[in-house]
Length: 113
Length: 115
Image 1 (cartoon, rainbow over the protein chains, first blue to last red):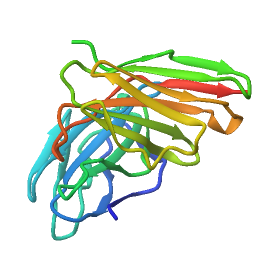
Image 2 (cartoon, helix red, strand yellow; image 1 turned 180 degrees about the vertical axis):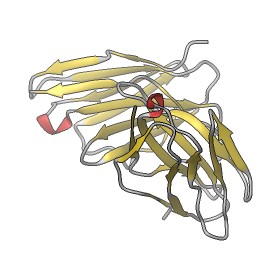
Image 3 (cartoon, rainbow over the protein chains, first blue to last red; image 1 turned 120 degrees about the vertical axis):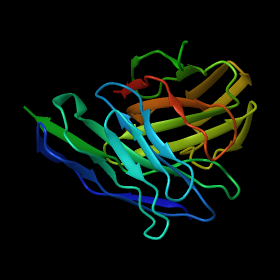
Image 4 (cartoon, rainbow over the protein chains, first blue to last red; image 1 turned 180 degrees about the horizontal axis):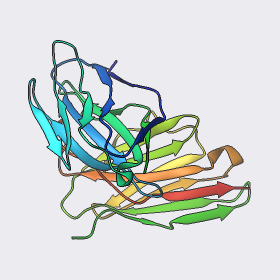
């Protein structure tokens, strides 16, 4: 079945550091890929997405590129801020059959001043 | 525009009591999802509706859990009887259509504590 694997957290960084959160997937067909962010006490919200191979999703300084050859969708940001502290979820939605999304376990990011 | 609305935001109940969680999806959205989030198990899909019809309820833990969607603007998740292991944050999410490219829009969640 479909699956998403994210790096274990927490990831702890100083402000202005470079961020990478790894995400790899297995899926049938050609899935759409998503990164969602969850701030403390809130629901998940879409951060960015990519719907086909080689597409780059970007939002709020975050970027991720859909790499079909390595089945990856790593999240990056050049300079993190304290306000980026949250839990980040990688997810996929496959095109074959059910469109029910599959979520990773989430990666907690803590940014210190 | 109003997002997904859930009520109550917090619920504290005693073991054995019935609990009903409510969700109003975004107007015009055809798909609705109920999730449960815990530290141990992460985010779990409980049930998925499309056009008010339950499509996949394989994630519903057991017969104590039931979900309904009587119309396009309202859904409930009921637990009867509740148990301490049901303590979690329950999220409702909606999406525009039944397509792989669709974004899910999550509500703020209901934090359930069963004593």
